[in-house]
Image 1 (cartoon, rainbow, N blue to C red):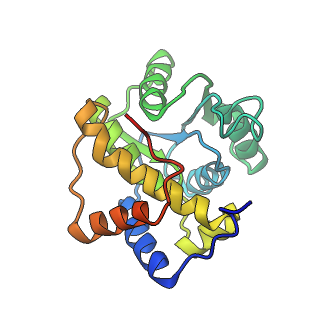
Image 2 (image 1 turned 30 degrees about the horizontal axis):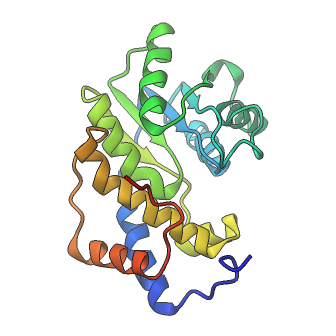
Length: 222
C-alpha cells in the first residue's frame, strides 16, 4: 500500500505530462478499412472502439489479446473476449467483430490480427490501432515494423492525463506505466521489435528523472 499512498509532486506531474503527450500520436482520424482493438487491462479501449465504430470510421474490428498476469483476474476469459462483450453492449453488431484470443504481446497483437483478417478475406491498406492512450506510440512503432505495407492511424479514448489517472485510480501506477512504455519505445527498436522513434530531449530528461524518483515497477530488465 506504500506505493499507492506516495505523494506525487507538482514537478513530477509536469514531467509525467511531457511523457504522456509524447506517447500520443495526434493522428487525424478518418475512415479506414479495419480497426484493431489492442488488448490490455483498460476496458476503455472497447469503449473507444465502439464510439469510433458508431462514427462510421471502419466496418470491421479485430479485438486481440489473451491473458497476462496483469489482466487475468479482471478478464478471466481473455482480453479480446471481454472487449468484444463490452462492445456488443455498446451497440457494435456481432458481425462487425472478429476475435483473436491468443496474443500475448503487442507484436503478436499485430501479426495474429493480420493473419485473422487475411483468413476472413480482408487485406486492408489502412488500419486504425485503438489502444490505451499511452500505448499509441509503441503500437504505431510495432505495427510499422511488422506490417510496413499498410497505413497506420492510432486512436484511443480522448482523455487528459488527470482523467486517465482517475479512471485507473492509482497515480503512481499510471506514472510507472508511462515510464515503462517509453522505455520500450526506446529499447525495442534495438531488439528488432519496432521502428525507431525520435525522443525529444525534454521528454528523455523527464523520463530519466522519473526513473531516478522510483517510478520503475513497469521497467523491463535485461
